[in-house]
Amino acid sequence: MIDFLEKYKPLLIYVAIVILAVVVLYFITRFIHQWLLKKEEAKFPGEKSTSLKLLKTVLNTLWLVLGIIALSFIFVEEESYGELKSDFKLALYLGFLAVITIITAATTNLWFKRSIREKIKQNQDPTNLKFLRYVAVFSICFIGILFSLLAFPSLEGIAQTALGGAGVIVIIAGVASQEALSNLIGGIFIISFKPFKIYDIIQITDSLVGTVTDITLRHTIIRSFDNKMIVIPNSVINKERLINYNLGELKNCKFVEMNISYTSDVKLAKQIMQEECEKHPLILDNRSAIEKLDGKPIVKTALTKINDSTMTIRAWAWSKSFVDSFDLQCDVNETIKARFDAHAIDLAYPTRTIIIEKDTE
Image 1: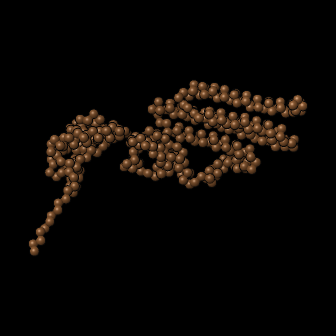
Image 2 (image 1 turned 90 degrees about the horizontal axis):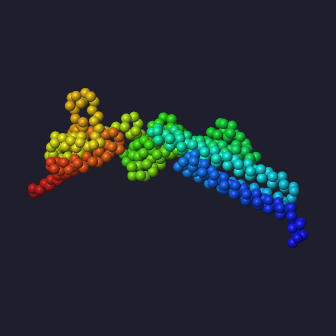
Image 3 (image 1 turned 135 degrees about the vertical axis):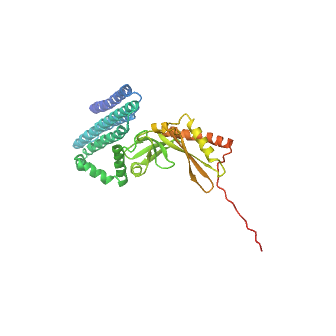
């Protein structure tokens, strides 16, 4: 045993140093991780990121790989030392490149998040910052991948072409589908021309109405009023005819319509609908100065249609916003129905008269 220790003493010391170095680096990484978590919480309060956990994993993996490569020197011939040194340098380069990319991307992402939160506090539009956040983080990761390709001789040409400038577009166009490119361009058009922005209430179809919560490189996310998250590709939403209830003036006119029977009193029905709408707390007086001087009513009512079995009475009820107009319509529908019942005004339904002729023969 003593002879064995004497013979392999330098190798055992080398192995012990390598293992000790890996263990020390592991604990240093753990300490730095805890320190960075405190710094992150102090600088970006309330913002939690998984990047630090990923960074810790990458560093620990790097120390383990470097330790294994270092230990491999004792099992190979001296002729192979050059290859092991190249592998050691490559692992070190890729590891630190990954660390720099993660730190840069995480810091950029947190900075954008804080800026977006400040914009929201100041009641400003955060749409541009939200979209630019995706662009910036994607660009940082993309550049990190390209620099990692430079470490491999067989892929160096591709990386240099991409880093040349125009090659970026060529590579993206080559590997990405036409739909993905159209979604990306669609997102840029939305940010540039602003048909809608974050927190706007938009209507795409009769049944699809909701609040825009996010605009990414690929799609737009809308939260409907029943709390469903609807994901629509940017290329699709750019082709749709939509209604933006927050574009320009917020006030909104809601048509309150009732179908009454032919035998009902039209004048009384119009009066009831006008009174119920005007006394609602969410009603907005949208009359001009001249209309007020002329004594025009706040809510206009009219007989708009004579149908096969009904007559349609409409009231034009204005409110401050789309949400208020929806609440107003729901409330007055109930109160108008109660008043109609009290005054014998029938809400008509389709009827059909069948005449049976008796055979005279």
